[in-house]
Amino acid sequence: MAPWRTLRPQSLRAGDRVRLVAPASPYEPAAYRAGRAALSALGFRPLWHPAEAARQGFLAGDDAARAARLRAAFAEADSRAVCCIRGGYGTARLLPLLELASLAGARKILVGFSDLTALLVPLVAEQGLVCFHGPVLTQLARLPAGDRAWLRALLTGQRGRGPVPLGRLRCVRAGSGEGRLLGGNLTVLASLCGGPHAPRLSGCLACLEDVGEPAYRLDRAFRQLQASGAFAGVRGLILGQLEGCTPAGRGEFGARAVLERAALELGVPVVSGAPFGHGRRNVALPFGVRARLRAGGAAGGVLELTEPAVEAG
Image (cartoon, rainbow, N blue to C red; front, side, top):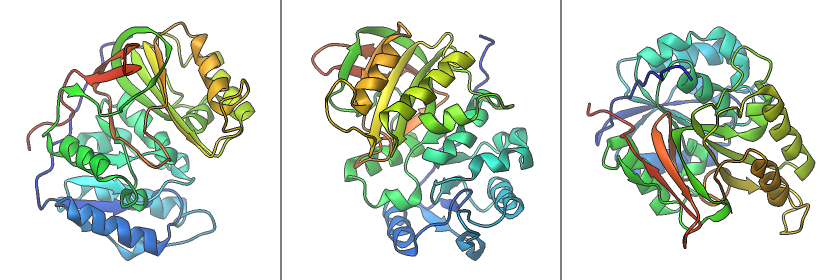
């Protein structure tokens, strides 16, 4: 794998402005208001434009408008971070309308997950910008206080090297691996295959989660990535939450069991049940940062950051 360029965004400080954007689907006003209050309680000042409330079917406005708002969010001098309001669907439609190098050059913090995987992965893998796979605004208020505190500590640089608070994990395949964190929503990653931003996870610890998918679709998405060569050279897998994926039980053909069996075929350390994704918890992960995975032991596994995610601003 070619040497990885790393662009660390500048850390946030209390009182810094955070631009709120909706690059995918429209959002519910009540969840927006609750999330905005939660972001303010973390000590940051949300910035929002009424155009972000646009609705055009399953999109928060047309592609050109959403792309223009996203470009403006990275370019403006008034904010130091970009927080996505909601995922849903539509982010990948913007990629041909964005200059990724220009976005990365702003060195701003970007936080999002789910459909935002389509933007996080090329910004990290192609441009080297450290991005944060973490809660969208409409999820923020529902999270445990500890997950919100972890997000704040990451973004302000109060937590750099050290263990990620994932709690007890399930060890699927024991071992150790070291690489850069990258991944996201399994279905969105698979949808990028065959395009100009197809994921390549060589040298990475792949973090995978999904929502509302039956087991056979999880298997199909995983094997599409595998056949595309996306997993070639991967150093380990961290399987997150599979909220609403079916069957939900512990049977042989349950959603998690199916995905764990597929992951075993890669022959690398694998842990499962990490609390990131669409469920009750969503522990933020700094994509592009080097980390070490130790699968096994009393806790099932430990993920440890080996370098900071942000630079002092």
